[in-house]
Length: 328
Image (cartoon, rainbow, N blue to C red; front, side):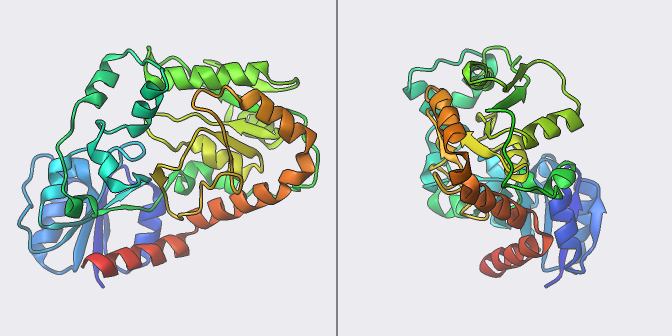
């Protein structure tokens, strides 16, 4: 199979794996996509959705495989999903069941927060709540989760840590992040995580709007028993995988509505501990982990192993070839 790729923002997790297929890998935009499509030399062309904003390749004879780079399961530029030429759209994650993508804008987790009584007042939130272009069952079936934040080059160092998971750790929990998001759900959720971290037993890491150098940030996470990880604009975040790579117990709100690859990344009580929507039970979870620290070694080992598998280029390429075999 001859696959060509044009990238601009795609993480190295894609470009590295796809380069192994033997097809060309070009940095560019619509011009480069058009050249590859018109050449007729490839079984498919993979590119990012924003590149197609000003071109119409809906009837292209060369199939298109798209990467939708927007956070989490958000399906942006939905008109592209309706193009007959588009055979698959790759996401960091997607919703399950797929019909949920038609229910509440692009951010189902915000609906979950609102139903729990959390109000998010921000102009951007209002736009997210608008009813999006509705997609059919067949169009929604084009969406596949594949490369996650685990594949980002910036996490290379964390993924290569040589950890002794039998050792005790100093900090009960860890949350360090910007919370200045002007009344959005991101701010609401991060403030809840910060409050829970601050209320946890000392010593702990609880910082907001304070810059930590990446080395200090990661070193403190390697010495933390738990990491509190809120949703962001999407459902997953760098922090999820940093926690797994650093050997901490990930504490996160429900992920049962989210599909990822591998499909066993976020399994409650297996790879992370599920907490309440507003981290209302997080302090008790932190205390429990501290009391029973040795019992969580298996969970930490499992989470780290699966996060490393999600980052493995050979595994990514194998899964990509499976997807292409289904849609082409």
